[in-house]
Structure formats: C-alpha cells, structure tokens
Image 1: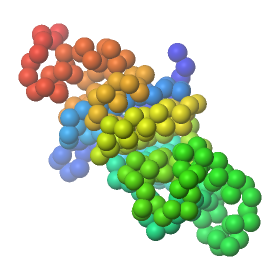
Image 2 (image 1 turned 90 degrees about the vertical axis):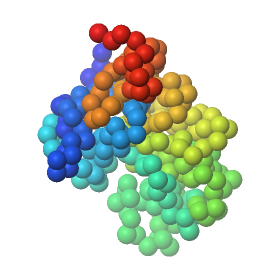
Image 3 (image 1 turned 180 degrees about the vertical axis):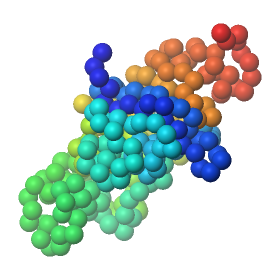
Image 4 (image 1 turned 45 degrees about the vertical axis):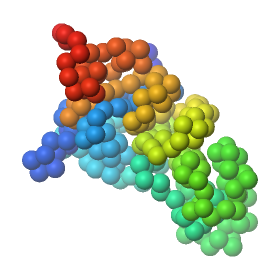
Length: 253
C-alpha cells in the first residue's frame, strides 16, 4: 500500500470543557476518494477546520506528505498542496465567473495585489483561468456575475477556485447540500472528472452520493471514528446502522 498523503494521529480538539474531536486516527491515500460521514454534531466540519488550519488541534499530529502541519496557517497549508471548499458558498457575487477564477489563480501565483489592467496582460494567468473555466463547464457563463448563477453553478465555480492552487489533496464540505437530484448527478460527474489524479476527502450527508463516489468511508460519531472501510463494509456495519437509526439493529461484538 502507498504511504498516506494525509494522516491524522490521535487528534483531539476541545473548546473549554467541550470535547469535539476525541482521538481521531485517519489516513487518506494517494488518488483516493474518502468520505467522512456522521450524524449532525459529530465533529465533521471541526475535523476539516483542523486539517485545513482554521483550528489547531489540542493534541495529536496531522501529517501531509509525512510532514507535520498542525498549527500552521491555512495559507501555508494551501501552498503545500491542500485546498478546501466550505459548506457555505465562498465566491464574490458581484464579480464575473471569469474574474472569480482569475482571483484564485492570482492568489496562487502571488499576484493578488497586481492591478487588474496589468494582470490582463499576464498570459499564464489568463491561460490558466481559461483552462479552469473550461474544466468546470462554465464557459457559457464566463461574463455572468457569480451571484446570478444557479446554486449548483456556484458550487462548480467554487470547486474551480479550489483547483486554482493545483492541490494534491482537496477537501469538499457538503458540496451537494441544497441541490436537486438533477444538480446532484451533474455535480457528482463534475467532481469525479475534476479530482482525477488528486486525493479527495469529502463530507456529505447524501448517502447515495457517499456510496457512489467513495473508495473508502470513515464514520465519525461524537468526535470518534467508529468505522472505516469500503462502501460495502460500511453499509453492513452494525455500529454505523445504529449511529444513524438510533436503535440497536444487530448484535455488535
């Protein structure tokens, strides 16, 4: 087995007396699509905050390519090759689709303070922005203000902005939340296409999405991983069924 690209070792997070993450061990393998699921309040978003640098763990170690990253800034972690999208769409609604993508490219290239009149003449930035526009299938919406896009288009745009940093690892936090079935099917297809060659960790409540897109699934309950395995293994795990159904459904060892 290849060495994990991302590893969590005995990770804890407490806020005063509230223990949110309780000794999580988790590996993300190269090229793997790994879902993290669990009931509301399980600590899934907090876990993503810890990985991406919004929070520092109270205890434990987070390794990226074998090197500790816990406590580093989100910007530093992003430059190392880890990018994240959030539950709430994080775009500039008054700027066009193209301008949103270009800002993400400029940040990656360290050009975020460059005047826009000048950046129009920086060919690598323009070319990379055009490429992202095509990859997220928004060419027809190039000059549309991002705030006028449909919800699924906004999520596609945000994923494109996430990809601007050429990440090795992508974290997606509930990318299908609030979508219709048609929008969900479209976004699943887009995520599969866009994350080829990357490692993906995804938090998602839609179990049909989770089982269709994941190579492995980890189940987080009250801040602890109670099971990790393939979709078939997780589907038949009695502890997982109890966590979601709230009742004893089988005799667990």
